[in-house]
Amino acid sequence: IDFSDLNSVIDMVESCTKIPVHQRAPYGGSLVCAAFSGSHQDAIKKGFQIRQRDGLSAEDPWNGMPYLPLDPQDIGRNYEAIIRVNSQSGKGGTAFILQAKLQLDLPRGLQVAFSRVVQNRTEELGRELLANEITTLFESTYFLNDNPHFSLVDYSISPDRSQSPAPAPPGKTQDTKSLRRIFEGVIVMNGEEIKLRGRGNGPISSMVAALRAVNIDFDVNDYKEHAIGEGRGVKAASYVEVKPTGSKQTVWGVGVHEDVVQSSLLAVLSAASSDRTQRSSYYDRHLRQGPALIRARKPYIIKNAVLGLGLWTIAGGVYWYTLKAVGQDDFEDVKVPDAPREPQQAK
Image (tube, rainbow, N blue to C red):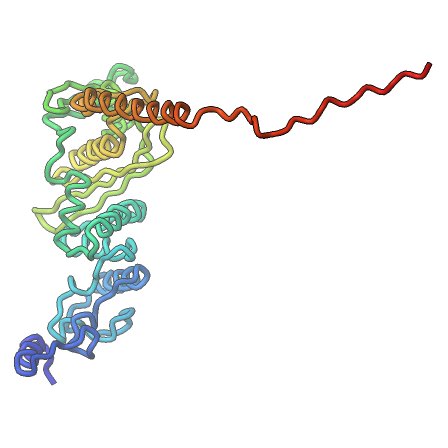
């Protein structure tokens, strides 16, 4: 029996009977191969990873796949329809979609962080998210296509020769592998080009040191990278987890580029933008009003003052009228007992 064109059979049955095929009907239901549970999605994701690691294709036996007794392609389904993401889904489903659509193998910490973003989005919309909506949300959350806060214009990474060891012997090249690195570059910060310079043990730490000049201060907690694709067109995907100074929370940044160094630098700027986005722009560190909050309140200052004055006038008028109309009770109808007599002293 060939079920590869089962969708046309379903369309014919629904057209003739005017009865829709139930979503959970065997083979033909649209949700037969779908998984909403986070644990199920994570198990399916690992099953696909094992098949990919073993070099198995669709023509190989379909054995040992968790929660999928048959290959969805055999009944006309694609792998994207397996994972359905709603507010109850975990990190596994989101990670599976991003790996399938963008070839990004997210670290576990980033999976957890982005799953919260996805859950908030699904609760806001009141429905599940499609695969293209999840990829778009990921790209906008971590500024893969456009970074409105920081963008890298030019940079160079060079050894710090200010404390170089003894000169190399004649005819030999000086060994700089153990020297610290200097980042020199230009970034666009909120539309303004800024030159930066910093020292560190490598490209990432030297850029982090350079960003302190523009009041961006954090420490790198974790860094991961992997290749995307094969051959000459391969790209590097970098993931950076940073902890801003004075904060207990960490933020992630993602960078993708053909150059592995530039990919890591873009990930640092992505993390800086994520930190700026998560922080409230209405108050500074000392809980004082920021310029954004002052601008937001400015059109309503007079209206709020008039409204407040009106409310105080109404409340005061009600209180005054109550005292005037009702008055204070002097308890005239209450009989006050006579004062107790003093005992006579014995003569």
